[in-house]
Amino acid sequence: MTISPFAPKSFPRLEPVAGFDMAVAETGVRYKDRSDLWVLRGIPGTQIAGVFTKSLMPGAPVDWSRRALLSPDNPDKPRILVVNSGNANVFTGSAGAQATELTAKVAEKIFDTEQKSVMLASTGVIGEILDVEKIVRSLPNMVQTMDVNLWEEAANAIATTDTYPKGATASCEIHGVPVRINGIAKGSGMIAPDMATMLGFIATDAKIGQSALQTILSGFTQLTFNAITVDSDTSTSDTVLLAASGAADHPIISDAHDSALHDFKNALLNVMLGLAHQIIKDGEGASKFISIDVKGAVSDESARTIAMSIGNSPLVKTAIAGEDANWGRIVMAIGKSGEPADPEKLSVSIGPHLLAENGQLAETYKEEHGATYMKRDYIELSIDIGLGQGSYTAWTCDLTHRYIVINADYRS
Image 1: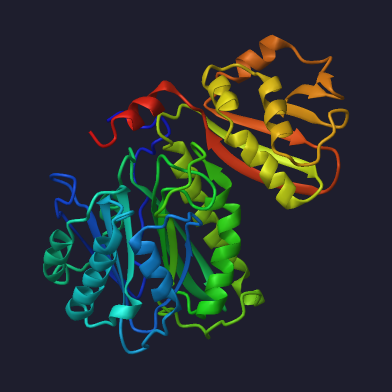
Image 2: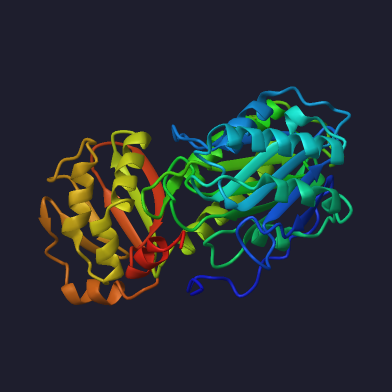
């Protein structure tokens, strides 16, 4: 496996989060000699918020977890999350639904919890029956090996085509009480808005009500995990969960807009954005990390549509892979977005260089400046639509031949 050029030198140090422990196991569902199963346990009273794929072909674990998220939790029972990699348990008919039910049923017994509130997530090959027996056989041993400090092992266990484990952490205070936030994620391809083939799991010891937690997670997802794209393909398995154990010794907060959450929100946003950026930096075959900043649109949503049109364009992404400052392709992507735009008011820049304005190539632009800038690993595209106050920032990577190599033989 070729490691991403953006891979960090080491996994960040994620300290234990009060109220949580975990275990990993090797089940052999698809991979040999590596962990592919992770269980996270939150103490009784743990609150969970979730955001899932908008695909109309969701996997059985997504269907199960959507229901589990809405089930009233028993404050006297722990909350359990079970995640496997290698098989997505998608498009597997009744066998897929039965696999989720059996997993939750065994988890209920092993971890003394409630089946209806067990959260499940799977990632990997679509359309193949999950050998769920390999998973449930591992759970009894896992309950004996639960540990508070296995975040890196967990990040490796949930990976598929990832070239490095992804983690982020932050600390803050709520009412003067220290609070920790840890997160891990997986994702490398089939990455597009509405969550992509990615899984993200965030744990905090903050004491926040479920409704407030859900409001915060949903809002921040639009600015982070839904603002990235590798290849425009939306997966069937996308799941991001935010779990709050409530172990921190501060008053419970039930209002998402409570001023006491100011520092917490900033810390959480940094964790989510850090994980989202790591996914793009590990985009299949990626050699460039690209930010797309759009302003001057008629609305924020219009700016988002334009930014994602640019980020999803194969012509833009291959030009950047070839280190070609092809501003014409950027203009093309803006035009095909269907959003309001006026060539006479539009300006396009790469880094500090203005490429186009007033409907034509900028008089000050020098081709050699663009060519030099495009050799960078980090590329910044700035677009001013010139029509309003709407703005949005998205992130993507280039599209190289290695993307084709990785995906052409994924199953074989």
